Image (cartoon, rainbow, N blue to C red; front, side):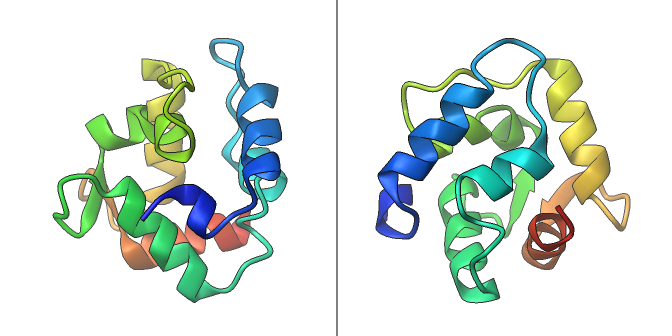
Length: 110
């Protein structure tokens, strides 16, 4: 499955382009711009499945770094600062990774 199977390609492109500059990523704005925030939990779970590259049931720090690439392959990687901030925002139980429910909450609260 590809991200464009669940979100409009144009919205993804606009969102990724908006955060092309290093250290400019804002997850709240990104999730809104790409259209994910307006989707229901089922679509959010599909997106989670795409971002969970190793199928561990969690999005770990190394996968978070590549989050934009999960939306479109030619996107940049997140910086360490951006990755750390995203992990802090999404990791509600403090285990160092984001589970599916945490991801849905992260997107919904954005």
